[in-house]
Image (cartoon, rainbow, N blue to C red; front, top):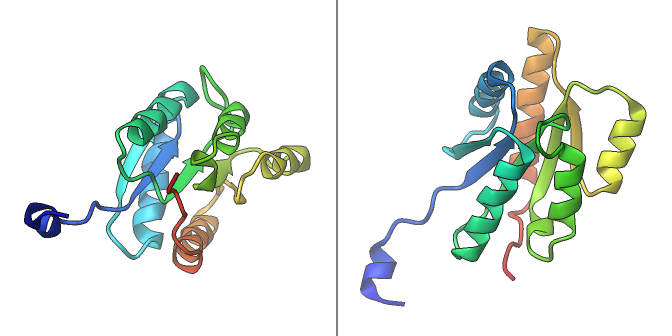
Amino acid sequence: MTATELNKPAPKPWILVFEDDDDDYMMEVKWMREGIPIEVEIIRAANGVQGMDILTKSLAAGNQLPGIIIMDLNMPRMGGKEVLKQICGHPVLRKIRVVVLTTSRAPEDEAEARSLGAASYLCKPDNVDDMHKIAGSLKSFWENLPPADVSS
């Protein structure tokens, strides 16, 4: 390691959010800012194809991967379940924790998401109290799990 590398700041942790709806994305950012006590960069993928492109380019460049992925199930171009299959089928990407955040309250969707590798399944809130619960869940998830081992 060179002196320049030693003086370079560590990369900021980041979260990749797969969300196609603008209003939902803005609310999710608010929940994350409320719930996660450290400064993280939040990067948005408006569909599954775009998100997988972000992940594969990050991986190929040797860049830090996201600490957490927040994923909607219902997205254009490539849905969340297909993205989960791709992430969990990859030897490095599967080490990233994926939190599904969706409107679906169907037990079969939750069971399938978990069987595909989702670390958590949260339903998008209908009211302010539920919003605070989501923020608390994200905080707990971020703080209580060790950093993902994303080394190859």
